[in-house]
Image (cartoon, rainbow, N blue to C red; front, side, top):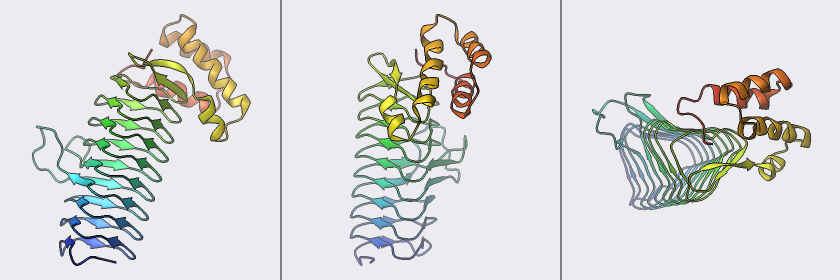
Amino acid sequence: MVSPLAYIHPEAKIGENVEIAPFVYIDKNVTIGNNNKIMANATILYGSRIGDGNTIFPGAVIGAIPQDLKFQGEDSTAEIGNNNLIRENVTINRGTAAKGRTIVGNNNLLMESVHVAHDALIGNGCIIGNSTKMAGEIVIDDSAIISANVLMHQFCRVGGYVMIQGGCRFSKDIPPYIIAGREPTTFSGINIIGLRRRGFSNEVIENIHNAYRIIYQSGLNTTDALKKIEAEFEINKEIEYIISFIRNSERGIIR
């Protein structure tokens, strides 16, 4: 299962049933779990922590030092969960002193040439399209779909169950359950098809839709819109998530 043409540092920890192809490079201070497949010319560098059941395609680089001039060589990690597909030429940098680690959760698909910068946090069940670039300390919540060639500014957060149109660029947060698109990137409705596919009931979808009508179409400022939602809506977990996301947004949300 391990090619003699691969380089594995003697201090690296490799689990069971791991397939390592020719010309793979695995550095010291690396831990790789069970049932992973690492294809030719992948590079797993210092500080990488990889869970179980992942497939890493040719040319991927995990654990490279951050592209941050403030980085001083501090110990940090790039942590990959379980059952991820990391396609060709994906780059996932390790953390800095800011957070100490970059995290990609479970069951994600990172398509060709995606870049995940230092201290980023990607949740579970996300799909990230070809050549999308994520700057440092971004957060992507669970089940988000980000199309190809999206540019995401540092410190931004993307909510769960969103759909972001290809080619978007943004420097504000994108709240959960919506579609974001156009130029500049704006609210383009809620992600009805995605929510139905994920098993959300029509009643829940309608509540989400009504909440966003107040946020985006009532003419109220964000603070007053959230107060109106709290006064008039039954606060289930979806509405609570929307309110909490927007209220805690440091960069403000897209309009």
